[in-house]
Length: 213
Image 1 (tube, one colour):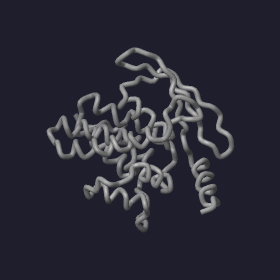
Image 2: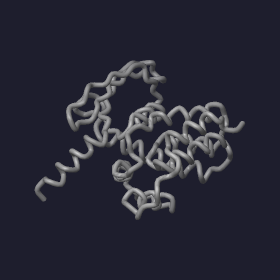
Image 3: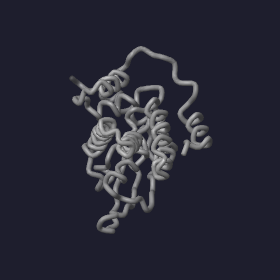
């Protein structure tokens, strides 16, 4: 089954066509090239933060989430990989894309590719979980896009049941309050995510630049 025209149309609009003009190598592109070349020493938090400094970052990748998973759930593995390729050209730090790529390649019998994308997906998820524990607003997991929250849920076998968002203060992240169900134990719990944006990240960079060294 081929990927539907509607999905391709949405991707064209959402991901931005034509592609961004070529630019001199920056930290993000250098980290991506290192990953693609097989370098397993890349710092995934550095990769995620470097992406937020590119023109492609807008904190609105959530619209791609279902487009990634729908063809995979329909067992259209080649179609899923077409969506993955389009997403990764724009944002190589999108964990859902690497999760879908790993599963699709595995189903198509391409184990080296499956393992490669699984390594990246796990690295990105570890990066998310390394910043906070999600138990309170003060210790919220720090994400650069809501789509990272849903990658976390899939990896942890959780289902989102409801969502609440606190109005952000000027230059601060939005705090998402997520009620989730553990699909293994059927237990309900609440997790907190601080969703960064251009303004909150700019404020952090300015503070870091002014800090005494």
